[in-house]
Image (cartoon, rainbow, N blue to C red):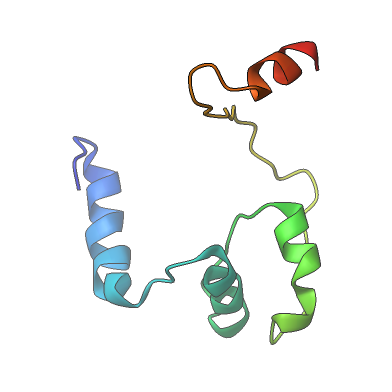
Length: 89
């Protein structure tokens, strides 16, 4: 952990390191772990949760007014035909 914040370091070494090897590798695994571990929560895209609800061993709930805003981008090859389409839209 690369942090100068002593509280973050303490939380990391006390709560993350002991279970680090068993942490989920995918978002779907994380959502299932939310069902099976009482002290585990997951942030995910709404669509990922809704389209996979039937695969979880519990009923997941969306927390109201909890969200993150972020930027996203799309990578394309130089001279890609999509560049003009994306410019128009």
